[in-house]
Length: 175
Image 1 (cartoon, rainbow, N blue to C red):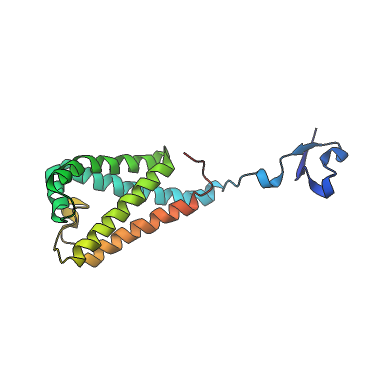
Image 2: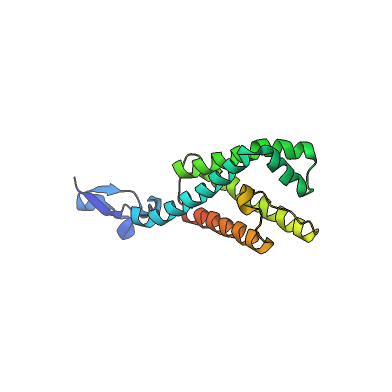
């Protein structure tokens, strides 16, 4: 039998059976799947953001003592908490980066990555407001001499990319 391209409830409920063809799902239940050409630019953004998180996590994982010191310089959490964060946070960043690339637990990785970058941004702004002159520790020695505006612009750029990924993937499957 031919498939009817119209919803089963067309023409005041007469339906496709009048035409002798098999009815399809109503249009309202068909989910929109963007073409590969439309998804490709977002995959590039996925990979770039993932690369940033993987690189930043790897740099910090290689020198957790320095990262603990960088966290402690913010004067937000006590030293023992800084040490715990320095050992676990880099691996969380690396995991989220890989999850974004392979699209495994994608929304969870987006959620955690967004929460991390928001936390990093608020901590940096709080340190600046309190007059603390600190190095962020985000990218190890590479970001050691960044100015506050450069650091803030980087964080806001990453946040904008993450929010764009949220919007572009709103029709994706849930966790």
